[in-house]
Structure formats: structure tokens, C-alpha cells
Length: 146
Figure 1 (cartoon, helix red, strand yellow):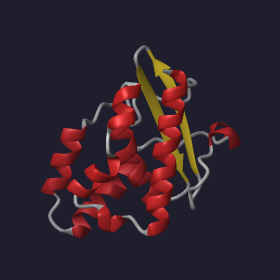
Figure 2 (tube, rainbow, N blue to C red):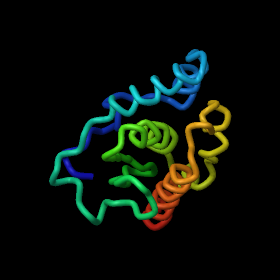
Figure 3 (cartoon, helix red, strand yellow):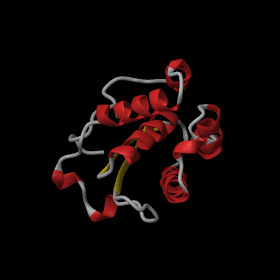
Figure 4 (tube, rainbow, N blue to C red):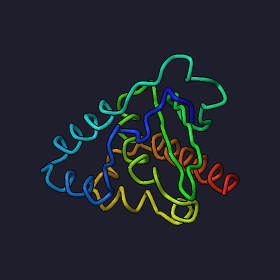
């Protein structure tokens, strides 16, 4: 990853457990949606020169850029999108996979976790396909760099 990206996508670590708790306390669909959008807003915007074609994830309806680098036995991730809703989903992806090993990345079931969070309703068919494309890209890169 280049110097334009922080050590953690949010500038500070948010654990899956902490995010699960925050979403559990958000009562109702609108509150969950607001929290997800806020998490997306908390992600830093990438500088224009970092939004390169080689970082674009194919298979997404919106444009999504992804950067992954190996840091010892784990991987650091950063992502951005031109869609606020997708940035909220990227917040989930980054929370799930940032700082994880290749094995943890390969075995974590993101869709199941999203279901546990009560957010499946948020995934239209095209968003679900895009999310799968992002996770597949992360897994491919982690597998190659392992």
C-alpha cells in the first residue's frame, strides 16, 4: 500500500465484535442503514491519483477501488467507492478482513455475518454480486501473496 492510505481503513481498529454490537444496538432498519452510511462516511476518501484502473474491482455496478498489501502474516486493506451505499458495505468488508491472515480471509463467511447483522435486506442482487466480486478479489490477492 502506498503512503496515501492509513494503517487502518478507519484510522483506528474496529473489531467485528464491536461493529456487531453497534449494529445490534441500532434498532430498526433505518437506524442500521444510518449507521452503515456513517461508517462509509468515516472511511477516508482516496486521492484521485490512487483511483487507478488496476485497483478497480470488476463485477461491481458502482466503481470500487481496492488496495491490499501484506504486512507480515496479515493483510492491510483499503477501499473506496463512488457510491455512499457501497462505501457502507466496504466498511463491513474492511472490518471483516483487514489485519487478517490469508487463512482467516479464505474461511470467513462474510455473507453469513451480514445475515447475522440483519443486513441482508440491504443487499440487492447487484449489490450482492458486487460484494461477492470484492471478497473474491481480496481472497485471490491474499492467496497469491501468501
